[in-house]
Image (tube, rainbow, N blue to C red):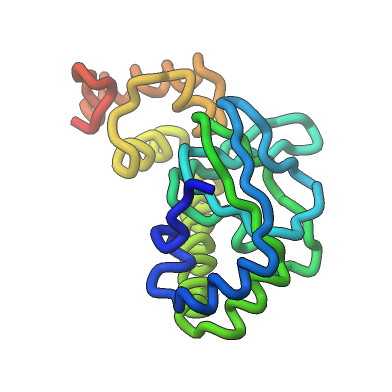
Length: 203
């Protein structure tokens, strides 16, 4: 297994002896995925914690009407499914897809529970991780439920940098590419954005 777990936010500063003892008894599994592979499916049981060791992924939601929405993008080292594993529902509310070749260490819920109960540093890390993810989701909800498309575009650029790939940005913003193109053109004409060598940036 090629993964430095102490670089993953959940285990930074952890007691190495505790981790080695618990994970040594139930190490889980280590999987590799290619770009575009589905790592976890929306609605499927979530019984393990997914530790992203290499690469990047995105989380996508699909409504009953078939509308797709990219909720988040994450890059290694990172924790996936941190908010789902101990939920009463116990299922993935999103589909997790590899956006690049990636490697994931999947650790069982009971092993994580034992580590959290034994090592207070990991407990504090876990609370921080799920709190940060909750704050991110609150911002995303604000962007999509309360903001106009123009506001969402400006917010996206402020947080992620220039929009160079319109198809990718449209996918993340949850709109059709023609709608994004029209909104970008309007923002440029208003002087809010300008087009640079890297793509669309704030004016």
